[in-house]
Length: 154
Image 1: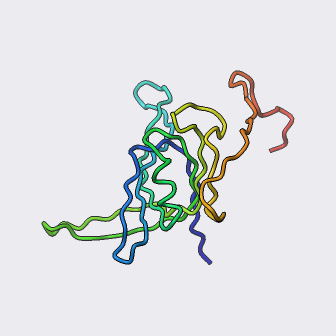
Image 2: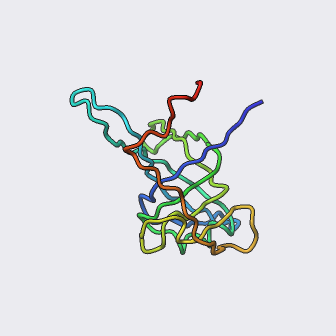
């Protein structure tokens, strides 16, 4: 058995691009920047490094969301990975891994404000397109205190 599921959250690196197949199906492409933290060997400090992920969404959902998504918005995405390979006009082989988006959740408002799900959300399995959701409050963890107690046995 194989499992191909991915969940990422990050900021859109560009406005979505909407195109259509010859049969008329909408295809939306966009990029998401996802930060990773690693320790710099020279300074010993932790630093953020961006990973840039290409994402693709198909159908009516793609068409509806292409008018809502904008560069800089924070989103959470669930989908599957797809690998593709092609050859350029110059004969060079290229390949990439992208996320085929099944679900997309807004994590910031359209004007780029931060906060818990201010922009509403869109679940890929729901009918009818964009659906406004209530604001959710996330627990705030004080980074100066340890979330792990000394009495946890593992």
